[in-house]
Amino acid sequence: MSEAEASVNKRRSERRRTGIVLSYVYTVAQVVVNLLYVPILLRGIGDSEYGLYQIIGSVMAYILLMNSTFSGGVTRFYCKYYSEGDILMMENTLAISRRIYNYAAVVSIGVGAIAIVAVRFVYAGVLTAFQVLESSLMLAVLIANLIVTMHNTIDVAVINANERFSFLKATQIATVVVQPILIVLLIQWQPYAISIVCVQFGTNIICFVIQRLYRSKVLGARIKMHSRDQELMKAILRFSSGILLVLVADQVFWRTNQLIIGFFYGTSVVAVYGVAAQVYAAYGPMGTAVSSVFMPHISRLYYSDRTGRAISDLFKRVGRIATYPLLLVLLGFLVFGKEFIAMWAGDGYQDAYLIALLVMVPYTVDLMQNLGLTIMQVENKYAFRGVVYAILAAANIAAVFIISPAYGPIGAAACTGLLMLVGNGLVMNVFYAKVMKLDILGYWKEIARVAIPLCLFGCAFLAAKGAFDISVSGWLDFSLWIVAFGILYTIVAYLFSMNRYEKGILLGLVKRLKKS
Image 1 (spheres, helix red, strand yellow):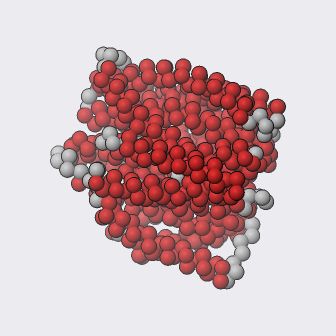
Image 2 (cartoon, one colour):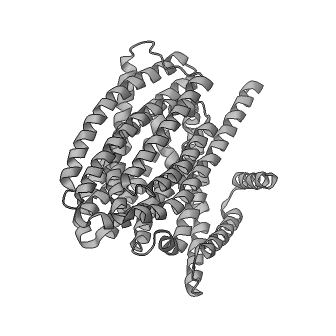
Image 3 (cartoon, rainbow, N blue to C red):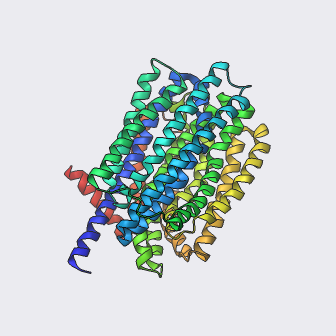
């Protein structure tokens, strides 16, 4: 390797490391904001309006699939040509993607109109006349937001491929901080769910403009149609169809439960499930924070090392690193989650603790292996995940419809958690091993070395908390216990779980904190 290549690789490695750190900062910012924001929102607009926001969010999540479907295809093919240095195909990919999004925008308007009619019809019995009107206006604003988001995907793909994670994460962090502040200010004047979506739309437009200027002015990436490459368009659409299948199934897991519970019990019970959903939604980015910065790197490995050994080694290394923050949050919630829910959401939301745990435990398997999904996208094997999840999603709908009337939201969460464990823990791991030739046995041996000492510590801490009848009262007391838990967790991880490479990363972070 020449000195110039070594310098480039070092710079890329530093960008990825910075991107991972900022991804965790973004995740922590989301958690902190939700800690402050959701209780204010609940008290500011009330259970009924918050439940309406959850229902419309569930409906809108399905329409947003249109954007997420094509964004994966744009990112995958742009990263492919970027790793090959093919500027002409990079520009052509963006131009073709823009054309696809123009068509998708028209379709989304039609789908949105159908959704407005459907919501008015399905929920007429549980919503007031004002809420029915409000839901229609919310969907209209969200459709406009979707169109903006779709066209922004092109800019995000370019920024990701260039590994400019610092800028991308900085804009995301700014949005996640500023958006709830504006929402809280607005609901003091207009305490309605529609106030939330209007602020989200406005802040997303500002973020879109900033990222577009960065893509065109700083990175100099052009959107230019050099040829009407039908094969490329078909390849993007074929790849996107696999992503669509996955996303539909994912939305069934994350959103359909709320729709079904809303149908049987109304908006107040949906609000309880919504609180739990906020918890496990905040947990999800703890796993994706690492994998989100690796698509350009995996693309280079895939097209330069066809043996797959480098990718398999990366899969194990990243999986170990991702496990530490995941178990910190999961075990911390196991120990202190009841007190957290009581202080955060208030009375009447106790069931949210168990609902969240029933989803978070099996979800952890998926999050530990989140890099595997990125590898599947690069290798164009992502459709299999869609097939598996479509089957599980259908089973989830049937099970939740049967279980919910008798066992409510806890039963619904148990069904979803069990099916996730089957899909993520069994079927996907067999696929990784047999088809993608990843060293899954070696992977789980590495994860066990990390997880077993930490899980034993978490269980011991929980047992001691019960044995000594430790009570947590107030946010100050809660914060002190969380800090103590985190310090002890880190000590146990350092002594019994971390290898030399991971200890070096931890000590490096400590040194940086001391300097700052």
